[in-house]
Image (cartoon, rainbow, N blue to C red; front, side, top):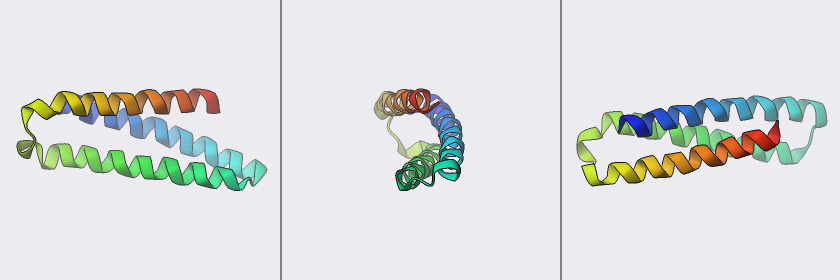
Length: 89
């Protein structure tokens, strides 16, 4: 549970970096597509914040067998966000 929460926090940090970049890009280009990217990144931030809260608030409700799957899911999300951040910079 702690590993999944830590990965989600890393996701939030990278997504905030992406949002910052997207805001700078939008200010300079006024491209509508960038608004969609900002919305997408914001929704992923919301998802990860809710996930971290749920992991700690509802930890007793999760079965031990589910925990590795949560780590893989958030790890895959981390890899995707890292790739997106790399190509955005």
